[in-house]
Length: 203
Image (cartoon, rainbow, N blue to C red; front, side):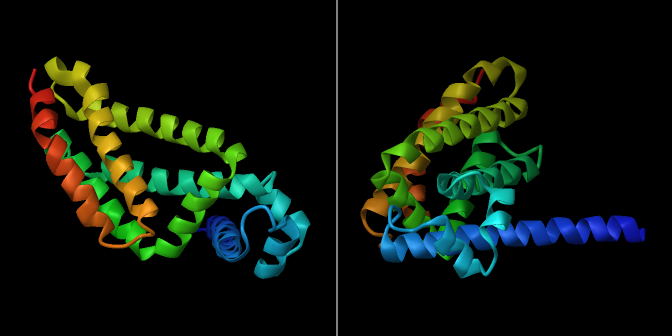
């Protein structure tokens, strides 16, 4: 690797680390003090950087919340694309969503904090909904790619049914203050829609 490539790679890693530090600090502050009372300056103080640095990454405080959501959704899309091509589409989607439950459990404080912020701040609902719509479209495209051509017309319905089961499970988990296993809650919902998912995979 050339020194230029190595330097560029290091800069990208540092940028990613700083971005994550902003999101982590914001989620902790939001959990402690509430979204409305936390300022950009508070978040910068927690990360020990200037507001000028903050605005290189985000245009407003609200962007932090949407970024946390889009980062998680992006990871799920990457996970789905990485599943073996020979695997049944429904099985790939199911496994990715179950693994998401494990990931969310490991990041429980941040996930619960951001979920509560979105529910309490009406101005964030639109951005969050748009992120989910874009994500569902990308997930649907990947599901369609994995289906037999004769069944591809069912991709949107297959993805919609499965992802709705996932979203409902996570909504219930948040409403229950994160009690119990996120994975098991997701699994229970996916088990309920599994017969329909299998039928949709048939031409």
